[in-house]
Every structure is written in C-alpha cells, then in structure tokens.
Length: 189
Figure 1 (cartoon, rainbow, N blue to C red):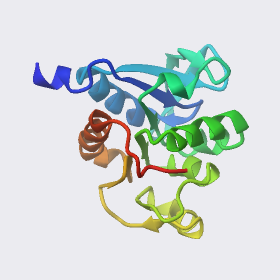
Figure 2: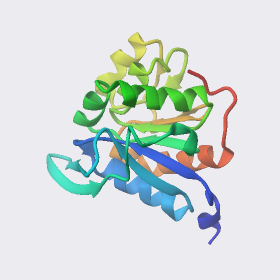
Figure 3: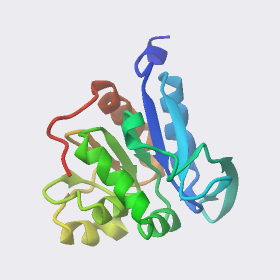
Figure 4: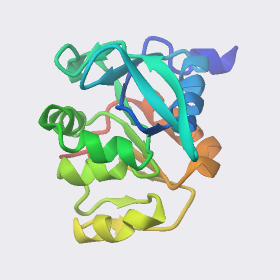
C-alpha cells in the first residue's frame, strides 16, 4: 500500500511513436501506475502506436492524446521509452522536440532509457549533464556536451537515464524517486 501512495495525484506524460522498445514502456508504466501515478501515452498522431519487442514488431497500444492535444503544463514528469526507431522518428517532429524541452524549462523530472536520450540532444538539454544511454549513442551525447558514463542508472537534477532493458528495475526506482521529489530547480534547458 505504501508504494501506491508515492505518486498519488501525479500525472506522467509518455512520449512515443511506432517502434518504441515495448518493455521500456510497459515496465516503467506499470511501476508508475503501481506507485499511484496517472500515465498518458502521447504520440504525433492518434489511434495506436506499435511497439518493438527485441527483434520483431510487438503489441499495439492506444494513444491517449496527440502532440497537438497534449500540454506539458498538465504533467508532473515525462517518460521517454527507447528503441532505435522511436526517438529517431520523434526527433524529426518539431512539436515532439518542443514538448521535451518544455519539461526542462519547467524544471520537471524527465526519465529517458536506451536510445531515448537522442531526444534530449535534439531538444538541446544535455550540455553539462551527467547521463547514460545505450552505448551506441554515447559519442552523439558526448559531442552534444554531455558527461556520458556507463552505469545502470544515472540521476542528474531530475534527469534519470539508463542504458538498456536490463537496467529497468534501477531505472524505475530512480524515476519514481525523482517524480516524488517534484520540481527540481536546477533542472534546466
């Protein structure tokens, strides 16, 4: 019961599109909901989004709001699932990039796993930040000014990052902790 009270009243936006790594949505979302948070799947277009399950297409999930309908001001935090295709497509959507940047401008917690930090590069929010990611994008993050480290979970003033699905338990714990703490004044764009 204690776990259910941790995030009671908190709303978390989950930004994604087709090709997100399915377990990087389902497990963190489950942890958020078990902690009492309300979650909304937000995508560039309505209908459904399709996950990627390691080596093939996975399940479909209903979109709660489109980017045109969603307002970052309505949310306490942002979750960015990874997958290779997902952030690569999202970073081409100006509204998606602006949506991510707004959470940093408002000092709200952001959790990004695997390839999702590509969105943080595109939003211009990684310079001087300590974070991790899937190893294949470490050079991109370093070139954008990030202090990249190879650890299962890294927290930097409300920004939580992890490398891969194996890191999800640690990622979930830190994500819930940062969301529970709320606004982080030193979180910045």
